[in-house]
Every structure is written in C-alpha cells, then in structure tokens.
Image 1 (cartoon, rainbow, N blue to C red):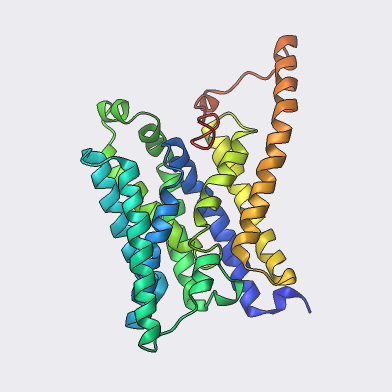
Image 2 (tube, rainbow, N blue to C red):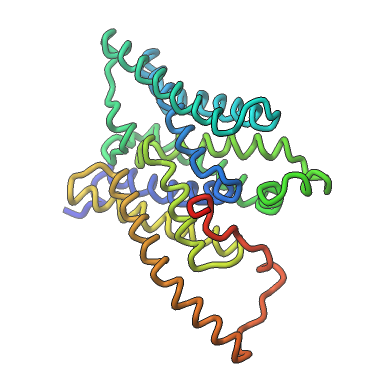
Length: 299
C-alpha cells in the first residue's frame, strides 16, 4: 500500500517539510552568533514542558512552547546583561530543564498520567496527531515569518551587535525575538526529530550549505533545501525500516554534510581557475554578505 494512503504518514510528511524549512532558517542565525548549541539547551528545557503537559493532562506541545519561550528569554536576558557567562546559562538550562522534566514525567507516571516520553526524546512519525500538526503549522509560520521577514536586521545583529546598535537597529528586541523563535522551532520539531536531536537539524544543514556557498542568502536557501530533503527522506526511511525518525533524519543530514565537504575543495579549485582566467561572474551587491566560514562547528 502507498505510504501516502495512511493519515499518519500524510501528517508526518507535512510536518517534516515544515520542520525542514524552519529549523535551518533559524539555525543559521545561531551558527553566526556562535550559539550552535542553544537549540540543544532549549530542547532539554522543553522536557519540563512535556512533563507539565503529562501532569496536567494537557497538550505537551503547547506547554513545551510556554516553558521554552520563558527559558530562552531568561537566558537571553542573562547573556545581554553580562551577569553570567553564556555557557553557564546554557548549562543551567541544559541540566535544570532535563532534571525537572524527568521528575515531572516520573510523578505523572506514578499518578497514572503516563505518556510516551521516548517519542518526544527521539521523534516518532506515529505520534504526529492532527492537533500537533495544527500547532506545527502555526508555530512554523511564525518562525519563517521572523527569519525571512527580518533577515537583514537579524543578520546585522548576529554579525556585530555594537555596530547594529549604533546604526539604530533595536538589538535587544531582535535578540529576544530570535531567542523566542529558536524556542518555538524546538517545539515545532520535537514530534518528528525529538528533543535530544532537534539541535542537529538546526545546525548540520547550515554547516553543509556553508561548504558550497559564500553569501548569507545563498547559505540560508541551500540549508533550507537540505533540511527539507533530509527530513522527508528520514521520515520515509523510518516508515520502511521501522526506526525512530529523529536519528534517521540526523544521520542523513550528517551524510549530506560529508558529501558537501568532499565537493567543497574541487569547487574551490575550479572557482580559483576561473578567476585566474578572468571568466568568473562578478558578484552582485546583494551577494556581498558572506557567512562565517566554518561556524562554531569548526572554529
């Protein structure tokens, strides 16, 4: 039987497309700011929201949204005021969110609340309910609107906060908005990719695109394309092989990164030869904003 004849697969594939677009579109700003692991920290905080959802018998997705947004805002405020180092704030989110979430889930299980925690940790194509899909569509639309609609402003803030502030860009507001958008993206992706792996889909497609592109816009476009392809392929593969969708998506993304890395050197040599021969197309003005080479992953 065609996999599209199943309602759960239709929901899972639609969710995969939305997640494939959203995660890299937000992740590229985190990579530019050397905060590639921020999504990982927020993912652990989201476990507290899932636990609250189990305890109060309400939607774990929307509870995770509320908790993640609060955690991301607190972390951003601490970072901007310089009271604590960013890595310490991230560690507090990481361990505190995970411990609180596990505690709440245990209390819920003892009280009869139960719940399939594994599907939230590693993702599952079987658990994307119609209500979850509505939440993914709404939250994904918000994240895409922010990352694409405010691309120039967010890029300026991520490149040089002080320069952006001098030029009149509302740096604090944009930093908070980016933190909230990252939190929203984590909760969007957790049903398919899983809380423990969602950060990889925000970072790895961006790292792969950076191997082949030189401008911010091109990197964002290619990373979104990679995100959609690996998300769809991972969900489809998990259906046929009967494995969790999150690990399948992440391993495919890493394979794409390895392929792009292998192609990068020959393409660079070809470009150098064309420049030496004077046949390289001049770069347009809007191509002039380069991405950070080798993100926080490599530097």
